[in-house]
Image (cartoon, rainbow, N blue to C red; front, side, top):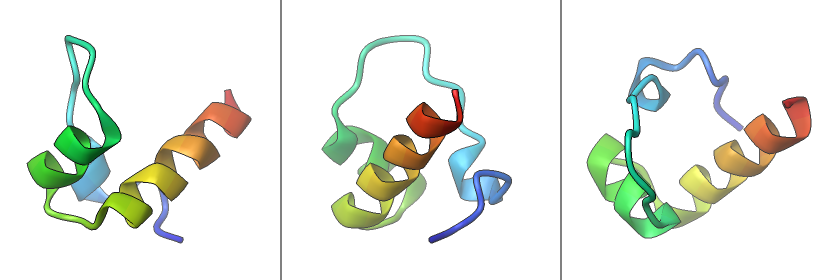
Length: 44
């Protein structure tokens, strides 16, 4: 799993977005984005 300090995940989101939209925005797979979001949610 990529670190949340990975620059691809330092995108500010100012509106609701789906995991698929986030993945497309930062250029990763849906799975990678989903895992990263879950990790961030667990970390608080």
